Image 1 (cartoon, helix red, strand yellow):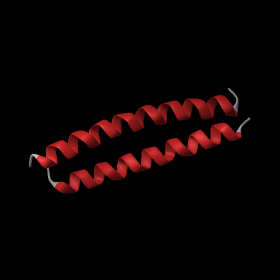
Image 2 (tube, helix red, strand yellow; image 1 turned 120 degrees about the vertical axis):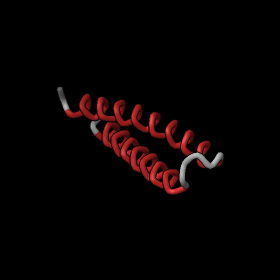
Image 3 (cartoon, one colour; image 1 turned 90 degrees about the vertical axis):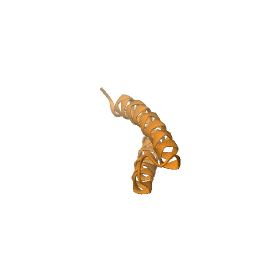
Image 4 (spheres, one colour; image 1 turned 135 degrees about the vertical axis):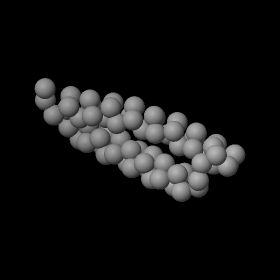
Length: 67
Protein backbone atom coordinates (compact mmCIF):
# COMPACT_ATOMS: atom_id res chain seq x y z
CA UNK A 1 0.00 0.00 0.00
CA UNK A 2 1.51 3.29 -1.03
CA UNK A 3 1.01 6.63 0.66
CA UNK A 4 -1.60 7.89 -1.81
CA UNK A 5 -3.89 4.90 -1.30
CA UNK A 6 -3.44 5.08 2.47
CA UNK A 7 -4.42 8.76 2.37
CA UNK A 8 -7.50 7.89 0.32
CA UNK A 9 -8.50 5.17 2.77
CA UNK A 10 -8.06 7.58 5.69
CA UNK A 11 -10.11 10.19 3.82
CA UNK A 12 -12.97 7.75 3.24
CA UNK A 13 -13.00 6.60 6.86
CA UNK A 14 -12.88 10.14 8.18
CA UNK A 15 -15.63 11.19 5.78
CA UNK A 16 -17.90 8.41 7.03
CA UNK A 17 -17.15 9.36 10.62
CA UNK A 18 -17.90 13.02 9.86
CA UNK A 19 -21.28 12.07 8.37
CA UNK A 20 -22.10 9.99 11.44
CA UNK A 21 -21.11 12.77 13.82
CA UNK A 22 -23.08 15.33 11.80
CA UNK A 23 -26.20 13.18 12.07
CA UNK A 24 -25.61 12.86 15.82
CA UNK A 25 -25.20 16.64 16.08
CA UNK A 26 -28.53 17.19 14.31
CA UNK A 27 -30.22 14.79 16.72
CA UNK A 28 -28.64 16.57 19.71
CA UNK A 29 -29.83 19.97 18.46
CA UNK A 30 -33.32 18.58 17.94
CA UNK A 31 -33.38 17.02 21.39
CA UNK A 32 -32.00 20.14 23.04
CA UNK A 33 -34.73 22.22 21.40
CA UNK A 34 -37.31 19.91 22.96
CA UNK A 35 -35.56 20.07 26.33
CA UNK A 36 -34.56 16.41 26.44
CA UNK A 37 -30.79 16.90 26.69
CA UNK A 38 -28.74 19.72 28.25
CA UNK A 39 -27.30 22.43 26.02
CA UNK A 40 -23.71 21.48 26.89
CA UNK A 41 -24.22 18.25 24.95
CA UNK A 42 -24.86 20.30 21.82
CA UNK A 43 -21.59 22.14 22.38
CA UNK A 44 -19.56 18.96 22.75
CA UNK A 45 -21.27 17.48 19.70
CA UNK A 46 -20.42 20.63 17.71
CA UNK A 47 -16.77 20.33 18.75
CA UNK A 48 -16.70 16.71 17.58
CA UNK A 49 -18.23 17.64 14.21
CA UNK A 50 -15.77 20.48 13.64
CA UNK A 51 -12.81 18.29 14.56
CA UNK A 52 -13.88 15.50 12.22
CA UNK A 53 -14.55 17.90 9.35
CA UNK A 54 -11.17 19.59 9.77
CA UNK A 55 -9.48 16.18 9.77
CA UNK A 56 -11.38 15.22 6.61
CA UNK A 57 -10.20 18.44 4.93
CA UNK A 58 -6.64 17.68 6.01
CA UNK A 59 -6.77 14.18 4.50
CA UNK A 60 -8.31 15.56 1.31
CA UNK A 61 -5.49 18.08 0.89
CA UNK A 62 -2.90 15.45 1.82
CA UNK A 63 -4.36 13.03 -0.74
CA UNK A 64 -4.27 15.69 -3.47
CA UNK A 65 -0.63 16.53 -2.60
CA UNK A 66 0.46 12.93 -3.19
CA UNK A 67 0.17 13.22 -6.98
